[in-house]
Image (cartoon, rainbow over the protein chains, first blue to last red):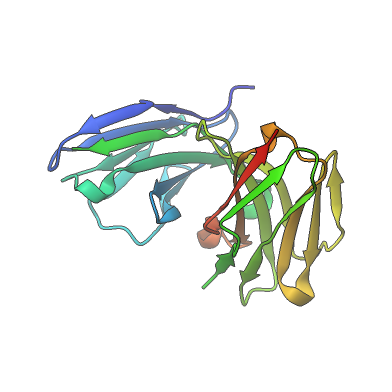
Amino acid sequence: EAGVTQSPTHLIKTRGQQATLRCSPISGHTSVYWYQQALGLGLQFLLWYDEGEERNRGNFPPRFSGRQFPNYSSELNVNALELEDSALYLCASSGRTGTFYSNQPQHFGDGTRLSIL
Amino acid sequence: AQKVTQAQTEISVVEKEDVTLDCVYETRDTTYYLFWYKQPPSGELVFLIRRNSFDEQNEISGRYSWNFQKSTSSFNFTITASQVVDSAVYFCALSLDTGANSKLTFGKGITLSVRP
C-alpha cells in the first residue's frame, strides 16, 4: 500500500512569491491534514480537509490556504511568502470509522521543505 | 485548549541502555487519543502507537513499551535495550474525539541519540 506522498521534496522561493505544495493521501483515506514544522516552533496544525471541505484551520494568516480535490488529494498554497514561512510542511491522511475522525491515526508523508530566500 | 509537554529536550544514551521518554498532557475533555510518533533524520513522521482515554492498559511492542496513567496525565514511552537506529526525534501528541478537534496537538519533541 502506497503511503502519503508529497511533492515537491524541496522548494526554494523568494519573499513575496507564492508556493504550492501537493499531497496525495493513502488510498481510502478521506481526510488530509497539513502541519508546519518550523525551527524552534515545533509541529503546528495548519489545515484539515475532509470530503472536499475545509473542516478546521490553525492559527495561521489567510495567505495560507488550500483545497482538496475529488480524488482526496490536496494542495497547500502560501501567498506573499515571508522569511518565517521557511519550514518543513508535513501532510497527513487518515480514514475514519463512522462519524469519529479520531478513531484512526494520521499517517504522514516525507514533507516538503520550503526555503524562502 | 489542549497541551502536550515533553520536558526532556535531548537524551543521549549508550547502545543497550533502557531509556524513558516522558509525556504529560492537559485536556478538559474526557474522551481523547494519545499518540507517539518517531521522526528520523529523513524527516517523515512514523506512527508508533495510539491510545484512547478509556484504555489505561500498558502496551508492549517488541523493545517498545508505553505507560498510560490518567491519574498523572502521563503517557510515557520506554525503549528497552536501545539501538543506534532508535536515534530520532520522538513526539507525543493528543487529539480529541470530535470532528473539528481531530487535529493533533504535539509536544516539542525529544531528540534521542543512541551512541554505539
